[in-house]
Every structure is written in C-alpha cells, then in structure tokens.
Length: 194
Ligand code: GLN
Image (tube, rainbow, N blue to C red; front, side, top):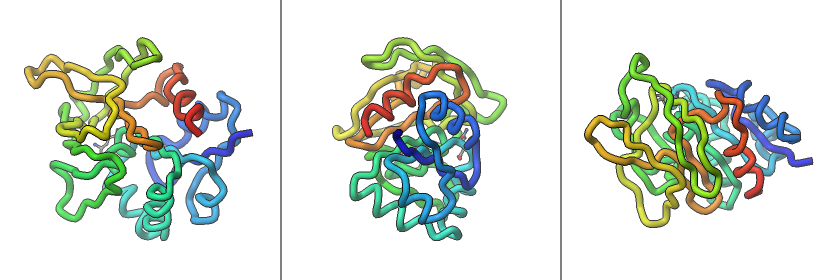
C-alpha cells in the first residue's frame, strides 16, 4: 500500500486525507520529522501560507523537508501549498520564504480576496475536464521552461491565460483545491508518479 503524507500543520488537511484514503493509500498526517521520514510522497494543503511557513520553521520540519524535496521526494502543493513550493512570492509578507522547488512566481490572492473566490471547469492535459475551486488563490505570473503547464485559466479579467496546474519533475502545484471536489483524478495523477 502506498504510504503518503499530508502536511498537517494548518489548512484543509482532512479533505486531502479523505481523498487519498478513498484512492486506497495509507495516509500519514505529517507533523514531525519522523512522520516525514515514513512517507513516499507529500501533499502540502491549502490554508494560509504564512502560517504554514511559520509552523514549518517552529516544528523543525522546514530544512528537512527542503532537503528531501531537493533529493527527489514527490510533493503536491495546492493553493497555499503551491505558494510554499514556488521560487518567488509576490504580495507576500516581507519575511515570507518559499522552497523554490517550482521555478515560478506566484501572486498571493492574485484573483482577488475571499469574496472573489470562484469555481471554473479546467481542461487538464491527459485528464480531461476537472472542477476548479479557487479560494483566495495564488496567480502564477511567470514561470521558466522547466515548468510543464498542465492546465491554464483565463479568468476573464483582461489579464489573459495563466497556468493553474503545473509540474516540474516530481513537484506538482495547483492554484486551486482539487481536494474540495468529488473528483480525485489529480490526486491519482500524483500517486501514479510515486
Ligand atoms: N491566500 C492564501 C495564502 O496566501 C492561500 C489561500 C488558500 O490556500 N486557499 O496563503
């Protein structure tokens, strides 16, 4: 059985856990280095990126997780998780750090604040149409050639198409929340890559 982790410091941990369990995984809520050492892949959930970053530091997980990602641990960041994996955070807190595992810049709340949260169907490469739930979502503004774009969205705000689901080697990122829908295909895609 695949043993996969969900970083469980803050955010919508339970929804990811349920979805991964529904796909037949053994799921570990990762709060310690010992938890982290036991998993084959890790989901970084949505929530508040500054809070998760703070808790990564105080829990002692920050550097261990960074080293593991550099060494090839498969990770999937959704929303705040995407922000944590990015190489540049725009409109972040002045002391906000991120792992730089995805060569892209994200703008926090780049589609507007909570009140501007929205849903939109997304065409995902090799998967098909999936529901996209965007909540205070980060907007991917620039990205390098190393980033494979798997889905884009034109939000109709005159800013054109932006990637919303990406992959760079074993690192996956979504600016939306696949765990808040009944559609587990993106989690399955991540599991297939382990
Ligand atoms: N805007 C949040 C942040 O900056 C992310 C929102 C989310 O994860 N739903 O952390």
